[in-house]
Image 1 (cartoon, rainbow, N blue to C red):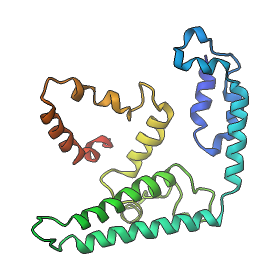
Image 2 (image 1 turned 180 degrees about the horizontal axis):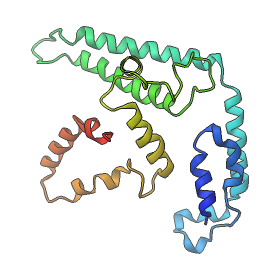
Image 3 (image 1 turned 135 degrees about the horizontal axis):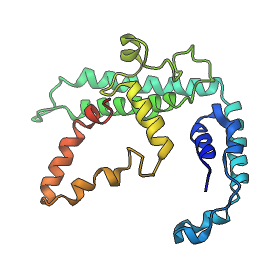
Image 4 (image 1 turned 30 degrees about the vertical axis):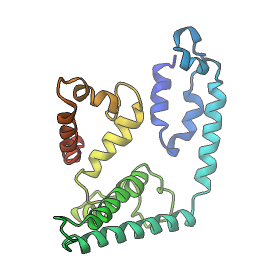
Length: 220
C-alpha cells in the first residue's frame, strides 16, 4: 500500500501544476491479489510506476498543446451559453397555449445554466485554462471570485464559487468513489432508499430535493 507521503503527493497531483511529483508519488510495492476482490485483482499485475510515467508524459504533452484554439473554443461555448440564457429570459413571460408556463423558456434557461456550470465553470475552476491567454478572466483564482461584479458576470448561480472549489475540486476529486467522497450518490441516498415509505412518496421527496439541493449542498 502507499505510504502516507506518497498518498499526500498523489492528492496534490490533481492538476498539471504537480505533474513533476506524480512519478515519485506512486509506491513501488505491488498490491497483493490476495487482499483484493476478484474484480480488483487486475491491479496487482499493473506496473504502477510505468502507469504514472505514462500519465505524467500525457499530461505534459496535452498541456503543451494548449493555445489560441482552446480559447476560441471556450469563447464559442460561452457565446452559445449566453444566447440560451438570453432566449430563456426573453421568452419566459410569453404564454404558450393553455400551459401555465413556457416550456421553451424553461429549456433554454436550463441549458444556459447547466452549460455555464458543467462546461464553462467546471473546466475553468479546475485550472483548465490557466495557461491560456484569456486576459486573466478564465483563471481558477479569479473566475467568479473577488467581487460581486465578477460573481454576477462569471458564474451567477445558487452556489458560491468558493464553495464549489472546496467541495468539488478538493473533497470530491481527492476522494473520488471513496467513503470520504461527498458526491457518493449511492451513500447519500441510502436513507431515502431504506426509509419505510411508499415509492410514490419517495418520488415526491426526490422532486422536492431536486428543486433546492444547490441551496444547501454547497453551503458552508
